Length: 179
Image 1: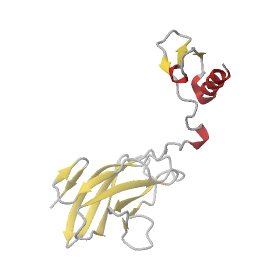
Image 2 (image 1 turned 90 degrees about the horizontal axis):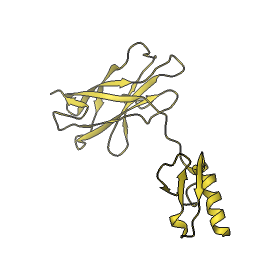
Image 3 (image 1 turned 90 degrees about the vertical axis):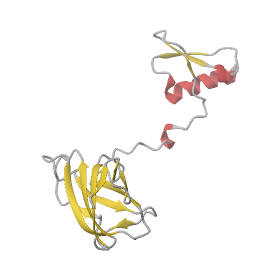
């Protein structure tokens, strides 16, 4: 009986009790069911050994999204990328401040070694959404056939929608290669 009481208490502490009634039967712990006070069908209980809320990583609120890429080869292994980004810029305190071209090994291609991004965005675009900005002179090693483009915002960092670009294709999901 004590183990059933502890299991019921664990379920309540795990967030299962909000407006619900815990029904503990004489069946094994795996058969404990939750019955909502509104007579909705019972749901299987979450084991009391679930990860505590303090150990769950929060979802990233990052919201600088790459919507579309137009990539143009301009020379031997050198490209220009035209990147369309959407972000709910609110002004100088929160705006999309850059985007990167990332090689498969994680290397970020930058115009100069001290650049923070492949393309630094110097001001908010709150009245121009989505917006497209370009960067030329992006050197891609000849053995690299695909890159990923990601956007960064001042407050939340990276984590929004990224676009993978197959440099050997003519087009693909959210990108085109202009040859």
